[in-house]
Image (cartoon, rainbow, N blue to C red):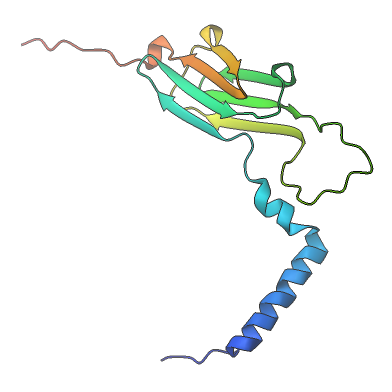
Length: 144
């Protein structure tokens, strides 16, 4: 059996506007929440001998980043510092976020944390995580 909508279209628009105002009142500026996204954005791929992570960290200094890797996990944490801006400055758009960040990943396989290397160039952090020997595939001979 089909049921009829409880609201007409204009009533639905008014109700959605009311809900949006309520959410903003409860949680503050929702525009900053919707554009904040995940930071840093990363790509993770397998190059054969190692896993490679590339993280975009614009405006972050290498000294403000900490990495830790164990078994099959990687954590990137740090801080993007707020630039010095004159207190009298009037922002017309404010989209960048500042402060502490932390991303933790479960890697697709175990890595050798002692051999992990990292470089930082032009705001891109590249982490090379060699696969653990136990995690590497081995060819098994078949006897007949």
